[in-house]
Image 1 (cartoon, rainbow, N blue to C red):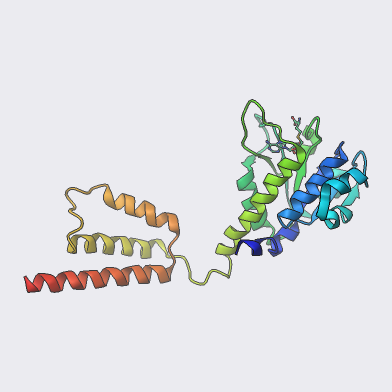
Image 2 (image 1 turned 45 degrees about the vertical axis):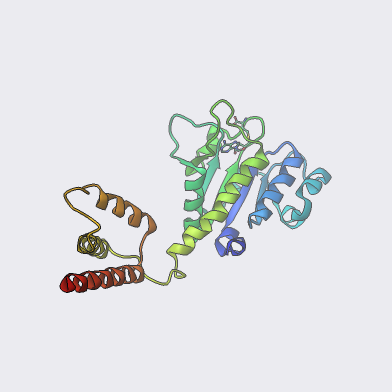
Length: 253
Ligand code: SAH
Protein backbone atom coordinates (compact mmCIF):
# COMPACT_ATOMS: atom_id res chain seq x y z
CA UNK A 1 0.00 0.00 0.00
CA UNK A 2 1.41 3.32 -1.05
CA UNK A 3 0.11 5.05 2.12
CA UNK A 4 2.25 2.72 4.21
CA UNK A 5 5.46 3.93 2.63
CA UNK A 6 5.49 7.17 4.58
CA UNK A 7 5.76 5.35 7.90
CA UNK A 8 8.67 3.23 6.71
CA UNK A 9 11.27 3.04 9.47
CA UNK A 10 14.18 3.98 7.21
CA UNK A 11 12.75 7.40 6.40
CA UNK A 12 13.36 8.43 10.01
CA UNK A 13 17.09 7.89 9.45
CA UNK A 14 17.31 10.44 6.65
CA UNK A 15 18.09 14.03 7.62
CA UNK A 16 17.70 16.98 5.35
CA UNK A 17 20.45 19.55 5.94
CA UNK A 18 20.03 23.11 4.66
CA UNK A 19 23.06 25.36 4.58
CA UNK A 20 22.71 29.11 5.29
CA UNK A 21 19.25 29.42 3.81
CA UNK A 22 18.43 33.09 3.14
CA UNK A 23 14.68 32.97 2.73
CA UNK A 24 12.68 31.65 5.67
CA UNK A 25 9.85 30.83 3.26
CA UNK A 26 12.09 28.20 1.70
CA UNK A 27 12.67 26.59 5.10
CA UNK A 28 8.89 26.35 5.51
CA UNK A 29 8.46 24.82 2.04
CA UNK A 30 11.16 22.28 2.82
CA UNK A 31 9.42 21.26 6.05
CA UNK A 32 6.18 20.77 4.15
CA UNK A 33 7.85 18.82 1.32
CA UNK A 34 9.46 16.56 3.92
CA UNK A 35 6.31 15.88 5.88
CA UNK A 36 4.32 15.13 2.73
CA UNK A 37 6.81 12.36 1.95
CA UNK A 38 7.29 11.00 5.48
CA UNK A 39 10.63 12.63 6.33
CA UNK A 40 10.93 14.25 9.75
CA UNK A 41 14.49 15.31 10.52
CA UNK A 42 15.45 18.80 9.45
CA UNK A 43 18.81 20.36 10.32
CA UNK A 44 19.54 24.03 9.62
CA UNK A 45 23.12 25.25 9.40
CA UNK A 46 23.26 28.98 10.31
CA UNK A 47 19.95 30.02 8.73
CA UNK A 48 19.66 33.80 8.07
CA UNK A 49 16.30 34.04 9.80
CA UNK A 50 14.87 31.33 12.02
CA UNK A 51 12.48 30.81 13.76
CA UNK A 52 10.28 32.85 11.48
CA UNK A 53 6.60 33.54 11.01
CA UNK A 54 7.08 33.36 7.24
CA UNK A 55 8.54 29.86 7.57
CA UNK A 56 5.67 28.72 9.78
CA UNK A 57 3.03 29.98 7.36
CA UNK A 58 4.74 28.26 4.43
CA UNK A 59 5.12 25.01 6.38
CA UNK A 60 1.36 24.87 6.84
CA UNK A 61 0.55 21.60 8.64
CA UNK A 62 4.21 20.60 8.84
CA UNK A 63 4.73 22.76 11.94
CA UNK A 64 5.94 19.69 13.84
CA UNK A 65 8.81 19.14 11.40
CA UNK A 66 9.65 22.84 11.43
CA UNK A 67 9.49 23.21 15.20
CA UNK A 68 11.69 20.19 15.81
CA UNK A 69 14.33 21.43 13.33
CA UNK A 70 17.80 21.43 14.82
CA UNK A 71 19.82 24.60 14.34
CA UNK A 72 23.61 24.22 14.26
CA UNK A 73 26.55 26.40 13.27
CA UNK A 74 28.60 24.12 11.07
CA UNK A 75 28.13 21.40 8.46
CA UNK A 76 30.31 19.11 10.60
CA UNK A 77 27.77 19.27 13.39
CA UNK A 78 24.91 18.75 10.96
CA UNK A 79 26.32 15.54 9.48
CA UNK A 80 27.72 14.21 12.75
CA UNK A 81 27.24 10.45 13.04
CA UNK A 82 25.92 9.97 9.49
CA UNK A 83 27.08 6.90 7.56
CA UNK A 84 26.37 8.52 4.22
CA UNK A 85 26.53 12.21 3.27
CA UNK A 86 25.27 13.34 -0.13
CA UNK A 87 25.43 16.92 -1.42
CA UNK A 88 22.68 18.05 -3.79
CA UNK A 89 23.99 20.22 -6.58
CA UNK A 90 22.30 22.05 -9.42
CA UNK A 91 25.53 22.01 -11.38
CA UNK A 92 27.32 18.92 -12.61
CA UNK A 93 30.99 19.35 -11.84
CA UNK A 94 33.60 17.91 -14.11
CA UNK A 95 35.88 16.39 -11.53
CA UNK A 96 36.57 14.98 -8.11
CA UNK A 97 33.20 13.92 -6.72
CA UNK A 98 31.43 10.71 -7.61
CA UNK A 99 28.01 11.66 -8.93
CA UNK A 100 24.59 10.09 -8.68
CA UNK A 101 21.22 11.15 -9.94
CA UNK A 102 18.42 11.72 -7.47
CA UNK A 103 16.89 8.26 -7.97
CA UNK A 104 20.20 6.46 -7.39
CA UNK A 105 20.75 8.66 -4.35
CA UNK A 106 17.40 7.69 -2.86
CA UNK A 107 18.05 3.97 -3.38
CA UNK A 108 21.47 4.28 -1.78
CA UNK A 109 20.02 6.35 1.08
CA UNK A 110 17.31 3.81 1.83
CA UNK A 111 19.63 0.82 1.72
CA UNK A 112 22.30 2.61 3.79
CA UNK A 113 19.72 3.65 6.37
CA UNK A 114 19.50 -0.01 7.41
CA UNK A 115 22.96 0.58 8.90
CA UNK A 116 22.68 4.14 10.18
CA UNK A 117 21.89 7.76 9.47
CA UNK A 118 22.01 9.45 6.10
CA UNK A 119 22.38 13.21 5.47
CA UNK A 120 21.20 14.92 2.29
CA UNK A 121 22.79 18.36 2.13
CA UNK A 122 21.32 21.32 0.23
CA UNK A 123 23.09 24.59 -0.56
CA UNK A 124 22.35 28.31 -0.45
CA UNK A 125 19.76 29.80 -2.79
CA UNK A 126 22.32 32.08 -4.46
CA UNK A 127 25.54 30.10 -4.50
CA UNK A 128 24.75 26.46 -3.70
CA UNK A 129 27.44 24.43 -1.93
CA UNK A 130 31.09 25.45 -1.69
CA UNK A 131 33.88 23.09 -2.72
CA UNK A 132 34.97 22.65 0.87
CA UNK A 133 31.41 21.65 1.77
CA UNK A 134 31.35 19.20 -1.12
CA UNK A 135 34.60 17.72 0.21
CA UNK A 136 32.60 16.53 3.20
CA UNK A 137 30.12 14.72 0.93
CA UNK A 138 30.63 11.13 -0.19
CA UNK A 139 28.63 11.76 -3.34
CA UNK A 140 27.23 14.65 -5.26
CA UNK A 141 23.63 14.26 -6.40
CA UNK A 142 21.81 15.90 -9.27
CA UNK A 143 18.21 16.17 -10.36
CA UNK A 144 18.22 15.85 -14.15
CA UNK A 145 16.85 19.08 -15.65
CA UNK A 146 16.73 21.26 -18.70
CA UNK A 147 20.48 21.96 -19.17
CA UNK A 148 19.68 25.59 -19.93
CA UNK A 149 18.09 26.06 -16.52
CA UNK A 150 19.15 23.49 -13.98
CA UNK A 151 18.65 25.31 -10.70
CA UNK A 152 15.46 24.38 -8.87
CA UNK A 153 14.00 26.36 -6.02
CA UNK A 154 15.29 24.90 -2.75
CA UNK A 155 11.86 23.63 -1.63
CA UNK A 156 11.27 22.04 -5.04
CA UNK A 157 14.68 20.34 -4.96
CA UNK A 158 14.02 18.85 -1.52
CA UNK A 159 10.58 17.77 -2.73
CA UNK A 160 12.06 15.69 -5.54
CA UNK A 161 14.63 14.05 -3.25
CA UNK A 162 12.01 13.33 -0.57
CA UNK A 163 9.64 11.82 -3.11
CA UNK A 164 12.35 9.55 -4.50
CA UNK A 165 13.27 8.44 -0.97
CA UNK A 166 9.65 7.56 -0.33
CA UNK A 167 9.44 5.56 -3.56
CA UNK A 168 12.75 3.83 -2.81
CA UNK A 169 11.36 2.37 0.41
CA UNK A 170 9.47 -0.04 -1.82
CA UNK A 171 12.66 -1.33 -3.41
CA UNK A 172 14.07 -1.88 0.03
CA UNK A 173 10.91 -3.75 1.02
CA UNK A 174 11.22 -6.11 -1.94
CA UNK A 175 14.75 -6.99 -0.92
CA UNK A 176 13.88 -7.39 2.73
CA UNK A 177 12.33 -10.16 4.79
CA UNK A 178 8.88 -9.07 3.68
CA UNK A 179 9.56 -10.77 0.35
CA UNK A 180 8.20 -14.25 0.95
CA UNK A 181 10.10 -16.36 -1.56
CA UNK A 182 13.73 -16.33 -2.57
CA UNK A 183 14.58 -14.93 -5.97
CA UNK A 184 15.30 -17.64 -8.52
CA UNK A 185 18.95 -18.48 -9.13
CA UNK A 186 20.46 -18.23 -12.62
CA UNK A 187 20.36 -22.04 -12.86
CA UNK A 188 16.65 -22.06 -12.04
CA UNK A 189 16.05 -19.37 -14.62
CA UNK A 190 18.02 -21.29 -17.25
CA UNK A 191 16.00 -24.40 -16.42
CA UNK A 192 12.82 -22.40 -16.95
CA UNK A 193 14.02 -20.94 -20.28
CA UNK A 194 14.98 -24.43 -21.55
CA UNK A 195 11.59 -25.72 -20.49
CA UNK A 196 9.79 -22.78 -22.15
CA UNK A 197 11.74 -23.30 -25.38
CA UNK A 198 10.86 -26.99 -25.46
CA UNK A 199 7.21 -26.50 -24.49
CA UNK A 200 6.68 -23.79 -27.13
CA UNK A 201 7.87 -26.25 -29.76
CA UNK A 202 5.76 -29.09 -28.34
CA UNK A 203 2.61 -26.98 -28.60
CA UNK A 204 3.73 -25.91 -32.09
CA UNK A 205 3.92 -22.23 -31.21
CA UNK A 206 7.58 -21.83 -32.01
CA UNK A 207 9.51 -22.94 -35.05
CA UNK A 208 13.15 -22.65 -33.92
CA UNK A 209 14.33 -22.12 -37.50
CA UNK A 210 12.21 -19.00 -37.89
CA UNK A 211 12.34 -17.56 -34.38
CA UNK A 212 15.98 -17.03 -33.52
CA UNK A 213 15.30 -13.81 -31.64
CA UNK A 214 12.18 -14.94 -29.86
CA UNK A 215 13.81 -16.50 -26.82
CA UNK A 216 15.98 -13.44 -26.29
CA UNK A 217 12.77 -11.43 -26.10
CA UNK A 218 11.29 -13.86 -23.58
CA UNK A 219 14.44 -13.71 -21.47
CA UNK A 220 14.30 -9.94 -21.46
CA UNK A 221 10.67 -10.05 -20.37
CA UNK A 222 11.16 -12.50 -17.51
CA UNK A 223 14.50 -11.14 -16.35
CA UNK A 224 12.88 -7.76 -15.89
CA UNK A 225 10.42 -9.17 -13.38
CA UNK A 226 12.93 -10.86 -11.04
CA UNK A 227 11.08 -14.17 -10.78
CA UNK A 228 11.09 -15.92 -7.42
CA UNK A 229 11.29 -19.69 -6.89
CA UNK A 230 7.57 -20.07 -6.34
CA UNK A 231 6.75 -18.22 -9.55
CA UNK A 232 9.17 -20.43 -11.48
CA UNK A 233 7.38 -23.47 -10.04
CA UNK A 234 4.01 -22.15 -11.17
CA UNK A 235 5.20 -21.24 -14.66
CA UNK A 236 6.86 -24.61 -15.13
CA UNK A 237 3.69 -26.32 -13.90
CA UNK A 238 1.73 -24.51 -16.63
CA UNK A 239 4.28 -25.53 -19.26
CA UNK A 240 4.14 -29.17 -18.15
CA UNK A 241 0.33 -29.16 -18.36
CA UNK A 242 0.45 -27.67 -21.87
CA UNK A 243 3.02 -30.27 -22.96
CA UNK A 244 0.91 -33.10 -21.54
CA UNK A 245 -2.08 -31.86 -23.54
CA UNK A 246 0.00 -31.59 -26.70
CA UNK A 247 1.33 -35.17 -26.32
CA UNK A 248 -2.23 -36.45 -25.71
CA UNK A 249 -3.47 -34.70 -28.87
CA UNK A 250 -0.59 -36.15 -30.89
CA UNK A 251 -1.46 -39.66 -29.72
CA UNK A 252 -5.08 -39.20 -30.81
CA UNK A 253 -4.08 -38.06 -34.31
N1 SAH B 1 22.42 28.94 -7.82
C1 SAH B 1 22.84 27.79 -7.09
C2 SAH B 1 21.70 26.80 -6.92
C3 SAH B 1 20.92 27.12 -5.73
S1 SAH B 1 19.47 26.20 -5.57
C4 SAH B 1 23.94 27.06 -7.81
O1 SAH B 1 24.15 27.34 -8.98
O2 SAH B 1 24.57 26.20 -7.23
C5 SAH B 1 19.62 25.72 -3.88
C6 SAH B 1 19.99 24.29 -3.67
O3 SAH B 1 18.96 23.45 -4.18
C7 SAH B 1 21.26 23.82 -4.34
O4 SAH B 1 22.42 24.15 -3.60
C8 SAH B 1 21.03 22.32 -4.36
O5 SAH B 1 21.34 21.77 -3.10
C9 SAH B 1 19.53 22.24 -4.63
N2 SAH B 1 19.25 22.09 -6.06
C10 SAH B 1 18.69 22.97 -6.91
N3 SAH B 1 18.59 22.47 -8.16
C11 SAH B 1 19.09 21.21 -8.11
C12 SAH B 1 19.28 20.16 -9.06
N4 SAH B 1 18.95 20.31 -10.34
N5 SAH B 1 19.82 19.00 -8.62
C13 SAH B 1 20.19 18.84 -7.32
N6 SAH B 1 20.04 19.79 -6.40
C14 SAH B 1 19.50 20.96 -6.77
